[in-house]
Amino acid sequence: MKHTKVKDLLNSTKPIDGISVKGWVRTFRNNQFLALNDGSIIHNIQCVIDFENTPAETLKRITTGAAVAINGNLVESKGSGQQFEIQVTQLEILGDSDPEKYPIQPKKHSLEFLRENAHLRVRTNSFGAIMRVRSVLSFAVHHYFQDRGFVYVNTPIITGSDAEGAGEMFHVTSLPIGNPPKTEEGNVDYKEDFFGKETNLTVSGQLEAETFAMALGQVYTFGPTFRAENSNTSRHLAEFWMIEPEVAFNDLDANMDLAEDFIKYVIRYALEKCPEDLTFLNQRLKDEEKNKPMAERSEMSLLEKLRFVLENNFKRVSYTEAIDILKNCKPNKKKKFNYIIEEWGADLQSEHERYLVEKHFNSPVILFDYPADIKAFYMRLNDDNKTVRAMDILFPGIGEIVGGSQREERLDVLQQKMAELGVDEEELKWYLDTRRFGSAVHSGFGLGFERLVLFVTGMGNIRDVIPFPRTPQNADF
Image (cartoon, rainbow, N blue to C red; front, top):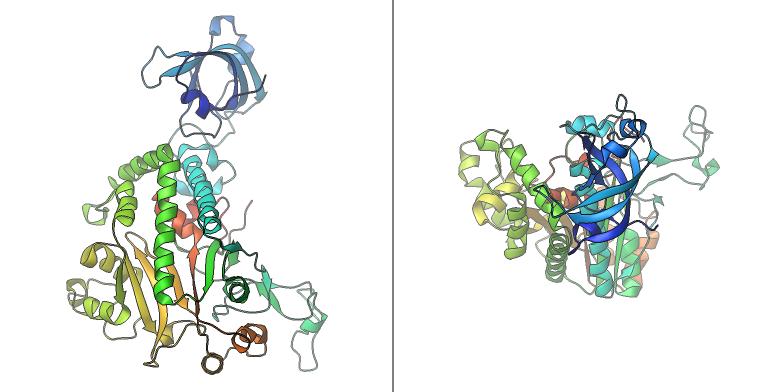
């Protein structure tokens, strides 16, 4: 018999005879009431077993984590808490789960413990909800761009260039680690390597996406990126996913319009498609906040934060104006900030970004026209020769969520900036060709997908919104 999803049974409007369902046991009590979940919805369905006519050996095998197949009838529930339940006529154990060894027992587990069991943590309510929301957000990203005529481009994962110029990259090599071939000067001879040159895992698909935008008009990438940054924080991963649209003929204002419209769309889509999961995660965050000191508690619930983004126009503020606001605000004057703002040119920290969003403007904020000295080489230099056409979107509770810019389309200016920053022009000759042949104004932005999932789910650690986190000293599973 074809089995039915738990979600469909719980959404039924009437009793149904002769149904089949398969899933995993969440709890089993009184040798009678089995809570079954199959991952299709956060809620379990109660299955009522006729224990007097069920072999004792079978009842012993109904343990948390066991996979079961159940036939029966969907009937109106006699108990409270659910409209329907399954009156079981036949039960088969598909896969046993030893209760002495199964780590995800029906009790509260710490997030750290669950990270150590990342292969099983998705069987909990919290992680099931997070991963369903992540899936829906991923689909929403493609839906948004495809509906608007963007071309999806798969940019290389192995690359010979460093898009960010930071040098924090994972090297890719087929050379023997202990005894690589050397040049006469004693350096590693990468001509003997698989690709004949030094290569790395990509930190961004932006540069390659720009070349496609200059032919196809509007493109986007959505793929894995890597940073060999030794940061053991709640905001950093060594492997994460990036969404990067690039649009020909868009200036910075059009880029800001696109980013605001896009991010509102995907959040609205998640709210529409994941009401049960987000309601659960909203309550989870409320319960977690109760354990924090009053001063550290968020002023908004998760659902209020999401509506806050949807219902407010993003306030557009220049970096210079933001520095003036921060220099003269009470937390700065009273030295409450960990990083005191003293002068123009400072690189803003999360505490400054959150102050602008949550305290000063009370809306999401887009900062633009940053100092050239703190931004990447490819950003369009303004006429003042000290700022670039960069923009960051700031959200409550998280700070920066999107970073982008109008790209420098003038060949001579780009070459000069590359020379000043020590970026090898020969290595990026192909990139410069887009400025040599038919250059035009163009813009784009990058959104770390996990940062988006973090915001939408209300989780506090980025390691909890990706299936198998990759961080310093951790590449398990």
